[in-house]
Length: 430
Image 1: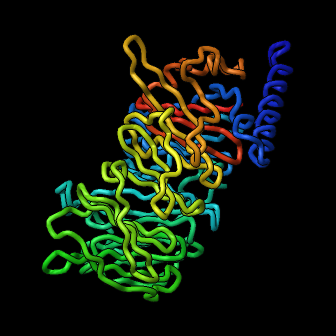
Image 2: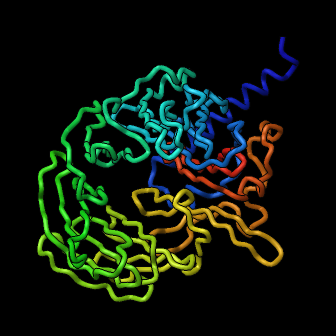
Image 3: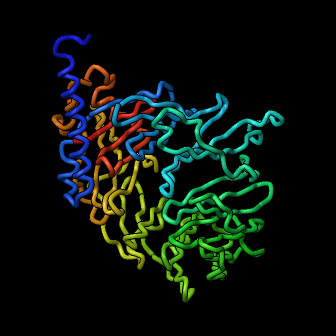
């Protein structure tokens, strides 16, 4: 028999959680201004993976939060009950390395590494395993109800697997056979193959694949080929002139433009149809080594010395985030959200007497900060609205924001999830 008054309290807390979650969903489904959607975000919940290893990836789908640690363990948490559901590792020797939510069928895909007993050498003695599991069975704590796929592919450490959510495609590369294969994520059927003997890298854009081959014998030309991602048909093939003694930092495809960046050189932009090339001569572009392309906005971002610059596909500077420096920029703590209109970023600045940590929601087009979690304001987020969970949260507000290693925004619930180096996941919402 429950203690007197305890039952009423539990009913109230459950109703409070459900009501708060519904409010978050309604906010997420409307076109509310970011300052409203992210106003008064506070630390709400804490999940422990029970793995003393830093969180390297967070993914959320259908109110299930997945946290992947550097040690290769993946834990699933139910946001409705705020309890750990299960671990996704079915084999104690299995190390999960990547997660992907397949929107085509509401399955979770995991990419794992397993040791090959006949090859003890760590550099070559691992095989890659791809497994897909229905979210509903994970919610029932039955992660074994699923199936492996790509079993016929020779996937080892010399190969890779990548998934494209926009086009609903999966791409494998076998280092032994030197073959790329493209699959449909609806049913994992093989669509076509590409010989990879001369290909150095493959890039995915909307509806297209860019194949970058090895330089010609003299090193002065870079063979490029554009394929339709649906059937592999060659749409365009040409050679792009490059400096033979300069390293090519990257080649990217964005709509009808190909961008080529060489060491200490200006950014080159090639029109796919006309093959006309222009050089974007800007000091900031020459210094930048990290680029993020906004396909929907037809813009791209560059990062240098903590400053974010916004450029048009014509090479014009649109804006710069000079008031919001991104220190120690890792990809895992920056995320584009709301159709690329907002940039969610974690920032940690060490000052003379203290360390200032914050999560910033920035307008990706202007660089203006729309909202902040943490920062210099001592009254923001210093308490948990759900007072019944205070005893369950081991980390303080400051501890939760310190050393964030992974970041994820769930638009379905309008919540931000962060992971730290000690294996904890924290939930932030209003």
